[in-house]
Image (cartoon, rainbow, N blue to C red):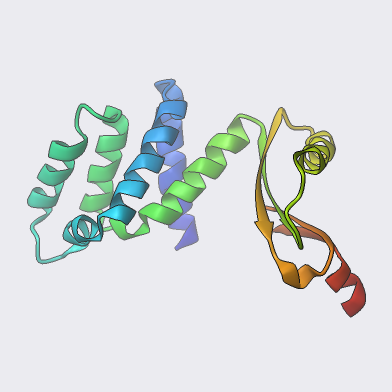
Length: 170
């Protein structure tokens, strides 16, 4: 299933890069996900197999046409046609990952036992920016008190565990 989601995300990124609209699509895709999350009835309507595809597509057109890029509206229509709208979250995650990868931006999660100061976060980002030879680094901070101390760095599927908990277990 992940391969299918990746293919849809790759198709969208190819189109948005060709039309030079990747940054705008990133913003609007995030807004659409938020709208679907905040309006579960609408999302259920779009997923309901009892509702005719034409009615679901008409709702998408009425709500999003003229407000988001045409390529994103067309993409949503394609997801409805192919019965893949239920995968929109994972497709979006993959699209965001691909967009950042193509812009040479590293995405990482910093997991620490306690909130870090901005200076500490900047130092970690600088280290991994240089290590991975990236233009920029976007980091999300997660606090996990079970680590006792130290940090874990997650970049994609890779985890660098420099926590006290890991040292005690090893």
